[in-house]
Image 1 (cartoon, rainbow, N blue to C red):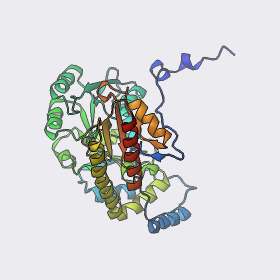
Image 2: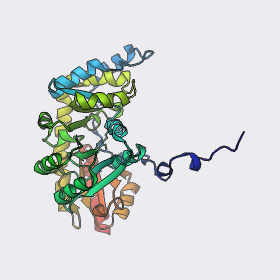
Image 3: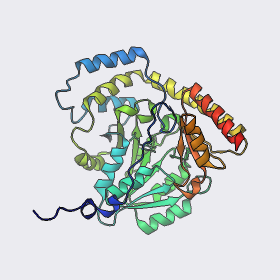
Image 4: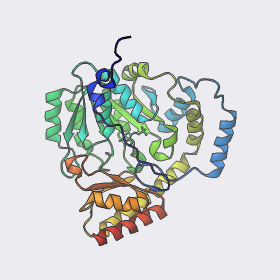
Length: 360
Ligand code: PMP
């Protein structure tokens, strides 16, 4: 046998030099780093789910088209008949399907910076060129820079998170409409955090043939199920559908999501509780000396301290895990992001932060 290749020889160089998406261990920690909903479902519903699990035909493959679930989602989101739905194992997977579908040589996937890191990473996986257009200092869209970049790179697809992660703000709708008007490519509005924003562009879908809208159930309390969806015209979705692996949505995800969506009042109550806590955490942070707090329409808050690394470590020593964004982008210098947790977790976080800040 000839000499076997090393990974370095065989793996694409951009993958070889990539760092894997880091998920820090969180056992025993107050976990406020990943935009999860901190609340479990009520016991009666968990018992109904247990019954579903007991009777689920997991010896069989899932329904590949997830027909029943799609119908429930269509009713739930009041999606018009002219629009189609594509399901992903989380919206991450949908970003990947779109990136794979458009990955012609020299195709560009565009977003703003800082934005959700997976836009850039998935572009790399899919062998697509990534262009990130820097936001203004206050995290609004730099429209001139964006329009210039669109004219220069002619992107195949632009991803815009609405509200944006990790900054938490909602971009100006007019600016988004200008971007939609300026590009010939697709625009994907990623509404991962829409339940906390009281805003959506879903009603705009019908007016623009090249606009798609992405949602996820991860932030409303079902992160462990992994379900994302894309809404848009069949002319686009039928092609992405070919890339979707046939059984990407597991039987349990289909069954449980359908069940939980019969109780959207519970999810809404939890989202309301999170929004209420967001106001409280924002007020606490704003009252602390030496902290700059950025307004949030999502279930997390971005804030700037004097020494993010030190504050992050001190919180960690007190078993509180948040996200340190310092060093990930120049606009995020000394920035930390806290996901809104349960009231007592938020109180602990605020009091720990207050102590740490006063000591430094
Ligand atoms: N879009 C945005 C803006 C996000 O912040 C995230 C998760 N952090 C996702 C998409 C992916 O979510 P999921 O894969 O859990 O659906």
